[in-house]
Image (tube, rainbow, N blue to C red; front, top):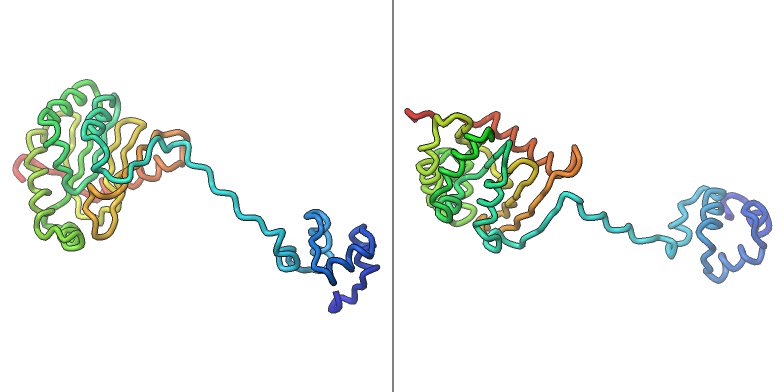
Length: 239
């Protein structure tokens, strides 16, 4: 007020309050109503929260995405059948992006037959597994204190999927990207297994998404899959 040449009376007249009110703001530290405080701060050219910190409200928590169906603390808490059930419901598209995820075949020996059935019904299936010779795969093993185990599991995963090579509607590729999330998509649903540095995938969170609106979380992960897929190498029968 002093810097701008304002008195209790002139500021009171400008913001339409009694001069004694302004006096109480200054001398007693009283906080005016928000609308009055906003007018006073604008008049003085100051930030309203700098003048009256009590008016600062905590930013409301952002609403949970409507696409989030469920959140699991660890993949180990998700029944293996949940992944298979997701695939079983698919009618148009199945995408899998992992390093190995051999638990899928271990939990369901008929997984390949199920994928063949889905493909025969017109479902487009894309499976991207880790390239065991990729530096990123090898580094992941070191980070998770898994040694060369993850490389062996990538080779085991390829062995599991090899009978599907050449099946119409099914594509198998290997990738060497840094995998931030393992993705399991079936039509408009997706299970996202986050990766945490130094933690094996089974100990990291999983969120179940169901596509709600274009441009949401679901599409972000779907676009991520497409980006990795574009860099992945097709697996041939000779490879």
